[in-house]
Length: 367
Image 1 (cartoon, rainbow, N blue to C red):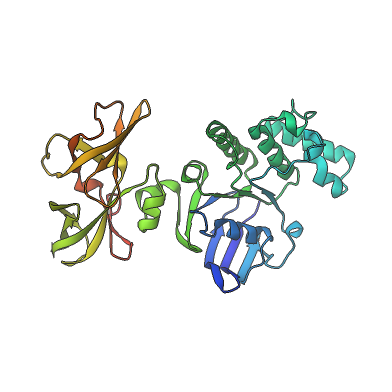
Image 2: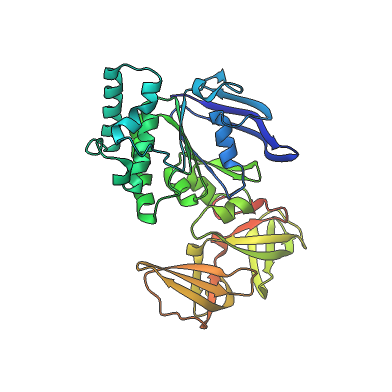
């Protein structure tokens, strides 16, 4: 096990800067997930830790040792890629043992390590099979087994579940979580899927355009997003975001108006001044479809655009005059149909507010 430190790490491809002065410390045995949209720089950052990309500036330390210019084989890491990259002419045993043989380990040591990896990954009954005889999830477990036998200080995962169907992704998430508990090894995991990030991570590193936007435990990013990017990216479905402005501000309390409804007013304790542009955020589970405005609520007229019935949860998509549809999460079933006129209630205690630059200035969890 080992710590990983990134000190002012940057990366440029010619004139294009893709990683900008990243500073991050990953603790011994910690499971950290890099998350962001395509092009955010998360895979590039991982590849610099692995030594597969040369850093343009800064330092990379693993277990306190400067490995900025060290070869990948000298860093004590093992990487699992999106592609399984198994040798089709070898069985599972030989695929897992391949790198150990190249490193000239003894036959007994290879056998010991392969069988231990097979036990951890529940592959012991599949060791004689060829890759063609395995499911996608089983192939990915073989690829992970190839990494385990190297006894690395740090595991690196680059979107390892992207090629799997939805059911297998759930199964493999559970397998990777169990693997981390059993091995206790430092793990860095890259994904664009924020559900994977929320369910696997000790801490999430949210990246956008090569910059770290926020670092923290999953529920901290969900409950107290630093900015609009994190608010819109973390959560499934994402947070509803409504443009607005400050109507008046006095005594530390601001009255907000929403562009979607000129008559809507929301009073919140927050630093602001009259005329400021703001964005009001509300999670889908915190929006209530009401027959009329309840006491203390802000009610917006809306029209049902579509309804997704998933069994125990229903998602209702509404047009309330905002730039984007508003998503409402309803527990259980609903009789709502497309085209139906409704009102939605927004409770001030469940709202988030972001300033014109996208920075959080008030929230339900952190007023």
